[in-house]
Image 1: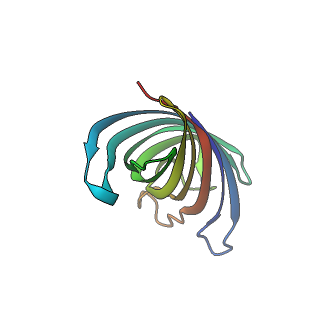
Image 2: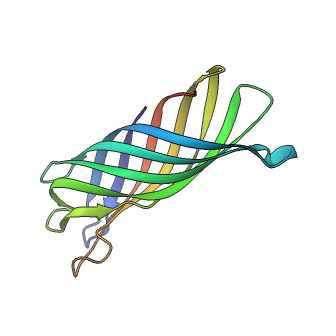
Amino acid sequence: MLAGYARGKVYDAERTPVEFFQAMLRAGFHFGPTGSGKLRGNFAVVAEGLGLWIDQDNHAGASGLNLLARYTWATRGRWRPLVIGGAGLLYSNVRIPDGETQRNFTPQIGAGIQYLHEPRLAITAEYRYHHLSNKGATDTNPGINSHLVLVGFSWFR
């Protein structure tokens, strides 16, 4: 489970600032230990169901699904760095950005760190460069680029 805040800009003529708040539930499948030496870690495929509130001229609520790949390094201590990337689909109750579409595509890439509080419980912090656009469904398609910061926890089976 993760929650976060993002600040970015709509890539329109005014470079309109935008903020959003996001909460998500994440489920992943780990493929087991991979690599050796300093590259030893775990590769996972991750699905995230999310809810989003966007602060724009016309406030928006949205929900969606992200499909991501994540690699977490298996360090000797409790701190585990990670990289994550992928894309998702987002459906909103109003057009995002204002005047565009209610269906958007969300490619994203980022990095983070996990702290293993217990062998099966980790506290996670992530940064993602997040893009939101309709992928050319309208003539203008300004899109939103933002910096998303997430915190949460993970439970491992």
